[in-house]
Image (cartoon, rainbow, N blue to C red):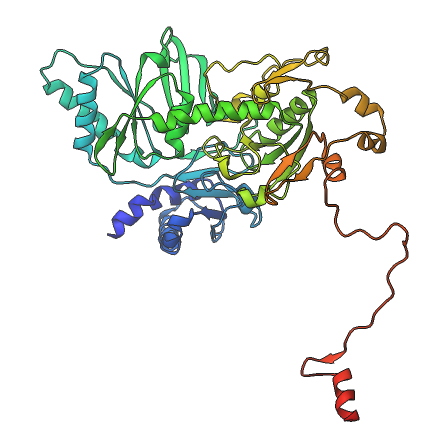
Length: 507
């Protein structure tokens, strides 16, 4: 039992990583569902580190105790390395446990413990073989990282099964490469573990064998396609749960035929209509964003490499589109938090690829991704169907210029009419703020028959929004600017105030 526990949490490999790089302050990041095992992990890790020191005869420097610090309740998504929390204890590295998006770190090295979820290898191999015989396309096998430990066994079992199979029709089966469990921060945000590649999508590269082709990467998984091949030529076979990692695959490769092997139920799932309907919803949010005047950039990560670059790029994009940008930093957004900013017409969420999609049906305003913002705020951009989840692919992309577009009206599909995105933009910059606010005629916040319903106006900034709202707070009367007279309160203890004692004495 102890060996199963240590194997599941990669105690030996983790201790070796810490000792090899001489880390002395190590942060152990646990998600909520694994926090119950944190004390056992710390105990096992300390024993392993002690044993490595005893058998290491090459050390000449004095021994330094390794400080292990357990981190829980991360400020942002638990799939990302919490570099902010680790910096509070001056950690040298972070050991990340559980599900991860494998987003590159900014300042600290990280070691990932994916875990080892149970899987029936024989049933999985049988499902791949049966589905491969029914299709003419080659198969590309992708998987959740918690099943990375069993991929080599599945590959060998599938090879043995194909050699014994007498069927003439055999589909080619390819597997994505298992990612390295450690990551060091890179100055180049497009580099991951020394490999030049984007976070999601593809890049053209020359392989070591002299051939050229395309390297694909998503969620830490990488695979190569030869020149002339595309992902549409393959059938994607996903091994794992229906989680955010799978949704990332479905949206990124929405033009491919995708099936999922449900590990918990040992069955094939071919109906992916719920996941594909997400694209229709996202397209609707893009149209909503086009009509927005005030855009809030919601910072959902402070550790993913390149987040500052994309924030600056999105700010310039929003300004160029004639809209007012604001930047908000908060952890784990929810409808209640964002409802505190009713002046914002849309929120632009900057986060890792696997937490970027927020179901904003219950939110007061829609929440979009940087990719959707690049389509909504770039005049002339068209949605081709391709979707980018990670924001690293958007950094340093050429932006469309918005000059000389102020005279061109845009047709709003939601309003059913032509609208001017750039009206009063130049005049507003030249006028004083007081004059610009005085010219606003429509209230940005109106009360309808239902007191809980809110309707936005055409406010173009937060100041203008609060200027024209129906409620301004408890203001002092304009005719009397002097402060109210001072009233002395009660003094003494609650068991008997001084005025009460005086009353009793008089009685």
